[in-house]
Amino acid sequence: MRVIAPLVLTFIALSLLPSIEMKRPGKGRGLKGARQKLTQDRLRRKALRRQSRSGPSGLVTPNCSEMTQSDGLYVDCQDQSLTSIPPSSAWSGVPKHLLLARNQIKVLRDGAFLGYKRLISLDLQQNQISQIEEGAFQGLTHLTTLLLQHNQLRTLSEETLLPMPNLHYLRLYNNPWKCLCPMESLIRTLQVPSNRNLGSHARCAGPISRKNRKLKEINPESLCEESNQIGDLHGNVTHPIEPSPIRGKSDATTLCHTYIFPRTWMDCRNRGLTEVPSGIPEDVVGVDLSHNSIHHLKPRDFQGAKSLRNLNLSNNNMERIDTGSLSGLLHLHELDLSSNGLRFVQYGVLEDLYFLSKLKLEGNPWVCDYNIHYMAYWLRLHPGVKHSGLLCQSPLEYMGDRVEDYMHSYNRECPKERQLSGLDQNQKDAELWGTPMELQGEVEEELEPSHLRTSQKYEIFKLA
Ligand SMILES: *[C@@H]1O[C@H](CO)[C@@H](O)[C@H](O)[C@H]1NC(C)=O
Ligand SMILES: *[C@@H]1O[C@H](CO)[C@@H](O)[C@H](O)[C@H]1NC(C)=O
Ligand SMILES: *[C@@H]1O[C@H](CO)[C@@H](O)[C@H](O)[C@H]1NC(C)=O
Image (cartoon, rainbow, N blue to C red; front, side):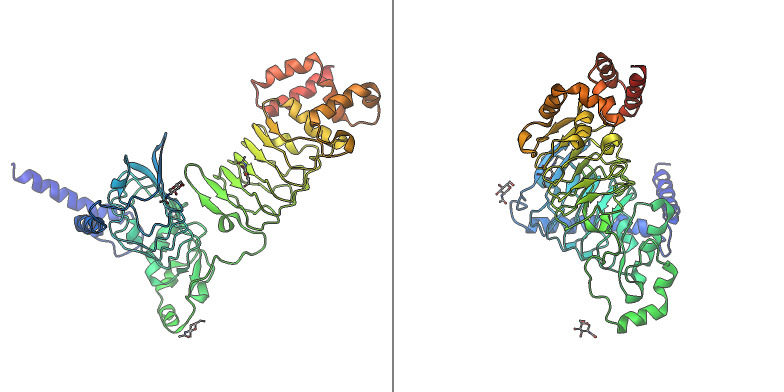
């Protein structure tokens, strides 16, 4: 019995392997999983040998920072001119997140991440990776997020991804993909409906007949057809290209850099943008559009960006924000409008910002006249919104004054006349908000989301 039991177990294990493999699409898999298990030890030995070669201290400790968040240890090695993966022994604990963006890594060798067993996310974007050896990702069984965008990859086989059974977020765009037969199995995998977040936005750079086609949409049947092979051998069309040209309105995903951790945000700074790029993905929490030339926000500019919490529009040329431009930004917490050309904010613009808590307004030529009243009243009505920099720049009379002080003196000087003259309904509403009724309303505000608050205000007005 004692001899038979292990044998039975081995048999069960071996008979399970092909059925696991079978679930994956594509062909030619067979006992690959078993083979990979066997090669893992070989890879580990290779990796160890490589590490010990880098000196008796084991490694040149890179200048990275470590931080512990609720979801584990982050190791931040961005912008460090690294050319290889630092060994896991360099860190004080077991990293869950490894940030290697913007280094100079060119090749990912077999077993490069063998010490990083617990890794959940791996950010390798904006390197110069042109080659990934088949065993590079061995051992990353917990990895869910892998960022490879903005590299020099032309080809990748599905086998490379097999060691990461939990991968559900893979970024491959802005690589010069050569859409030929070796990519067939990978492309099939990307197209499985449940792999929705694998390889979105990635496009072929060659051959010419497939240039700019999305990996997600290309017909995998056609990749290994004979005519392509011949075409490729004789053609001269697969030299690397830069990010695909922008057609029509610029697309945020190709134009900006996307980062996933510690939160999903897009860096669109300094892109020479004259308008808000379209297609900000639904899961993006922060967008930095500062230092561009956006002069006008239009309705639906942020359509679909449902999760946005931080929006930075500082240092643009913004003169106008249309009503409805910020609609849909239900969760926006922080809005930076500083250093623009704003003189006032259109009536209604702020109504969609139910959860705003911080608003930066400095460096704009705010004009203290009727037009500024909307914003002033809105801010008074939303005391939870911390704002800064709302100072009159003109007329001369009020220059340098806080807009609140201008409002105060405006109301003090001749409130009666102004209330009776041709002011619009909103302004009359606003002036009634200085009554005890308003105080009660504001106490209730703490308890209610503001879309309920607003209607409450109108009820109060009607009662009054
Ligand atoms: C390491 O990083 C710190 C902080 O960014 C910097 O002051 C220091 O010069 C860096 N050292 C090296 C060797 O790059
Ligand atoms: C391929 O294209 C490059 C640049 O366009 C050119 O210099 C080279 O001679 C071409 N090679 C062939 C085989 O046509
Ligand atoms: C917005 O961007 C500017 C310029 O890049 C920066 O100085 C500012 O701190 C940012 N605002 C916020 C709220 O992060």
